[in-house]
Length: 187
Image 1 (cartoon, rainbow, N blue to C red):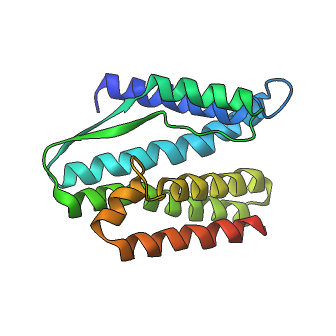
Image 2 (tube, helix red, strand yellow; image 1 turned 45 degrees about the vertical axis):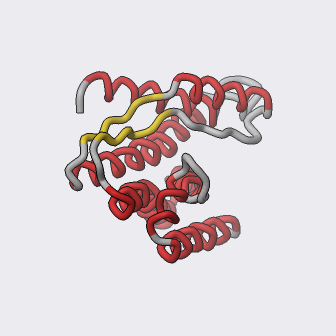
């Protein structure tokens, strides 16, 4: 990973963390920002790195690039809705080289599956460490939301590429996210 890619990832993480935390309260809340930085940051970074390294596994070159307009829109939307809804599209992993529909579907699936795994890890933290329940439940919810949202089957979302490769796989994984979202809603 080169320094440009690392800088793009770092700026994206801070930008989306600000968007998700800045306007929730009347004034900036440093502890809530740190909670969002950890939960959204870990989920976002590992989601994108999953895409990158699966693409590399298939012989392609892959690099993350931020989308400045997407970061600005995320912060602006958070301001307008007072944190009620944020559509964050801070950037993406760009893949160079021919991978075909099946490998492209698997590369796309890697990110949401990483979010599902992270949701389970954060959920375990919530149950195993009573002092870390807020971190654990927030991290689980954030990762289920990120992964599930990315499985929407419309371009440019990951779900569109997964559905183009195999609709059954897409349906099964999307259903897992719905069940996980509903389950976390009752916790």
